[in-house]
Length: 225
Ligand code: ADP
Ligand code: ADP
Image (tube, rainbow, N blue to C red):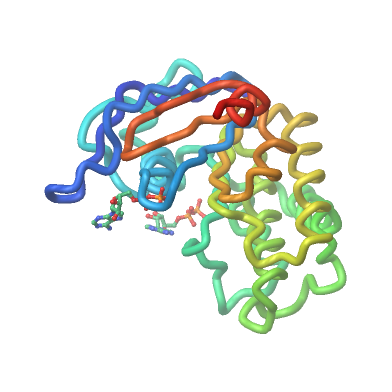
């Protein structure tokens, strides 16, 4: 993995200051949960790292390199966002293999990787389904498989389990954690679920009104009054 640095990020939507001078250093292979009330700037931060929107000022650095100037598909970032849809006209397997094909991965290797990722999210039996025929939870699992298939340097997850039932949610949390640990993938996750943050995160970043209020181990953050 590689460290991800957000350096003095500011983002304004017109007159709304959504992100207010946030500096956050995520270590290589670390999983950081972004927490805070609705509207505090969590999704905006992830969208900036993904490259879907440009920050008003500040830098985004992965390893030694600024990635601000790269388009989203050149950033080596795996993305699972609620509004980041699967390609509806493609099968499950085609969706998961899309990024590999785009990167020119050898066909046999790509096929194997797709099969492994679908196995991981328990969707192997639906590989040939059209994605528009899937339930919300199935779509989230395919989105996770798609994000992980490219072995991203950075993984961005925005409420990635919201459509899953409790038991699958726990399974997926454990799987993501396992993959993130074994591949050493630097990960940022937005969640409203404190248990989820406690169980998964190495550190928790708490935002309030666009400012970073706390950045510490989950136990420390939750012990405070
Ligand atoms: P969170 O993800 O923590 O709920 P957001 O990053 O979505 O917060 O929003 C941060 C602030 O920016 C909020 O005040 C929100 O209303 C505002 N905001 C978010 N997206 C837009 C947008 N596209 N246009 C204008 N304001 C926005
Ligand atoms: P690739 O699969 O080729 O690596 P992506 O599928 O990541 O590329 O991105 C395709 C394009 O769709 C991106 O350039 C991005 O700008 C756009 N895009 C996808 N989802 C969103 C979103 N939620 N908000 C804004 N733009 C998006």
